[in-house]
Length: 201
Image (cartoon, rainbow, N blue to C red; front, top):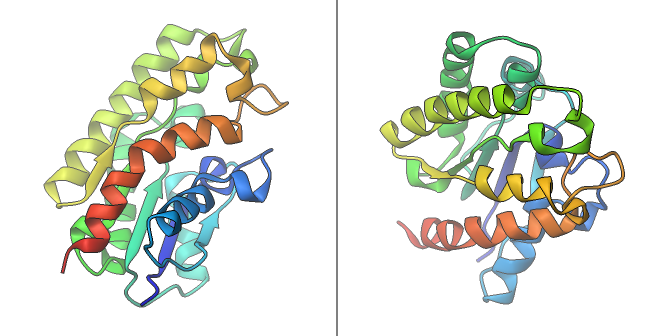
């Protein structure tokens, strides 16, 4: 039996600047297949620059429906980048989370990833990296609380994203978005949760 996989997000899910095969959802499917777990190519609904409400609007515009064996959600960095604030994010993320949960066959089949810290990248050299980190941590605290409350799995990849501060090979040429090497590290964290989720009935 082949499982279905819906990946919802923004630039980090579409893999801005990376090769298609380096996108983390694609790498995750490859890793699952090496373990004998049949998973279809991911259906990716993501675009660079999308906020949580823009992602939600696109989900509705595409009339995505049905129940999926595995669903992932990674969104919110553009809410933070645009200065929307934690209160606004909590509302829109809550709505988005509810929609993502409606696609998952079980709440535990939804895997939510934390927002990476772009403040450590060369792109952000002129920014206040400490302030960016603090805001991202606040956003992630909201996402983790809401996700766990609903029974979804939450994976904190933010500490790994901060390794880019001293290793630019973890970024693509724009000095902002992750490279395939960074995404591979994310997959190492997500893989056990995905294996466990797909085993649940």
